[in-house]
Amino acid sequence: MVEQLGMSWQGERRKPEFTAAPSIAALRGLLREQHWDAVLHCLNHGACTPATTLKTLRDQRLDTPLIIVAAPDDQRAAIKPLRAGAHDVVFLDRLGRLTFAVEREIREAGHRADHRAALEMLHDSEARASALASNLPGLVFNLQREITGKYRFLYVSEGAVRLLGVKQHELRGGMQRFLDTLWVDDRQPLLDALAESAHSGNALLWEGRLKDGERWIDMRSLPHRNDEGTVLWTGIATDVTQTKKTEAALRESRAQLAALSFHLEAAKEEERERIARDIHDELGSILVRLKIEAALLASKLPAHLSPKAHSIEKLLDQAMGTASRVARQLRPGILKEFGLAAAIECQAEDFGHSTGITCRAQCDDGIELDQNTSLALFRIVQEALTNVAKHAHASLVVVRLKLENGNITLEIRDNGRGIAERDMDKPKSFGLRGIRERVQSLNGGFHIATAEQGGAHLLLKVPTRRDADAQPVESEEIIQQDLF
Image (cartoon, rainbow, N blue to C red; front, top):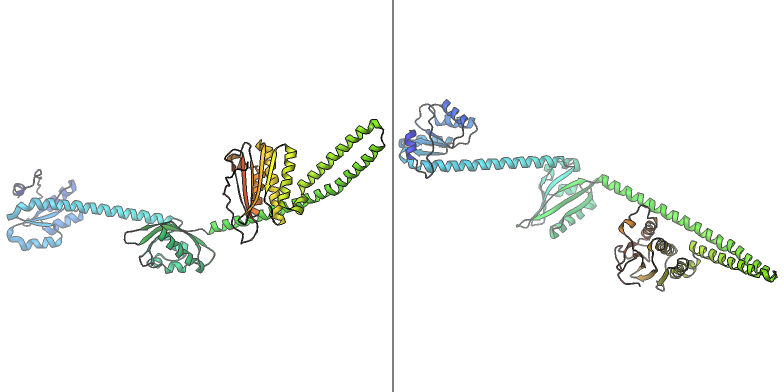
């Protein structure tokens, strides 16, 4: 039979090797020793039946093709092995098709092996993805939006129980069960966020409360639209309750610090006002009396002592001027009597006289502000000019105060050495930090950088009305007009 099979081979490739297995034990041994492309079973083999051969292949978990070789008269007998699992039958009077049958079944076996390998890889991938999703601190989901606008979960990880207290199967399918776990007021914002993400293609970023109102969840995902028009989100929902609590505590702490800062500033201003009043009322009156006494004394002194008396009078004039200037810096009465514009112009004049740096002030007329806002802006101008005198090495400073679009814009430029990023980030930059705190207390915006033509450029905007109707201020806006 082996010679007959070999002679009937008609393939273009090299003729295969045929090995006879006289018994089922011999077949088992051959199958264990090496890999075989196919097994040909002669139907009239006395040592074993096709069923035994099939069982042997299955016991050894082999997918080797089994082809029955039968006599022409055994057609009915050959049907039973085919039904049991044999792959093909070749009759002895048509051995010419043996080549085709063997090659075809080898190809099919290869396809089956590739399919099994792909399935194993898929199962491994699914197992890894499932293990990863189970260990993530949240809920992994696949959410699909149909063409009709309905939403349904295609996949929900085991985190549903930990996050929502709902089993996986309860969420699969529709979306209503998921919505039922959310706070009533936060359900529609989620649907709006999903609709916007599906329409624009932007990421889904949503935070909302659970039904108890105490816990928060965060959903994040990127949408994918297929050719059929459906949108699929694959993302994660996590518990952000602790983060929300931390943020709330941080906001409360900042509010308390802001209130403390405001209280300290108010106390400082009260102390400044008291000292300024003492200097103006008490020290000023003493200096005036001294000047009067010195003038009276000078009129009665001999001629050779008159120059000394006039020198004392000049020193008293300087002391009176210094006391007046210190009192104005501590609590400028002009600010209360004539307004912010006049106070800034006076401060610019004093700054120029005391430092020798040219200081120009340009203030719009008709600016009326409440006392706290006026005082805060005046202190900002004082602090900015002090920084210029200490660090800028400038010869010119310009202060611009104007009213535009319901906001007060204060701009200060100098022609000095400018300011670097590291200067603004210094831990002891208390001057800039104080300016920023004052602006934030006024609900304003603050920006400082190196100007285009050199020097520093400070720009801030605050609303004229400190209420909800005030126009919002953009802190990063930079006015590019040349003040020089």
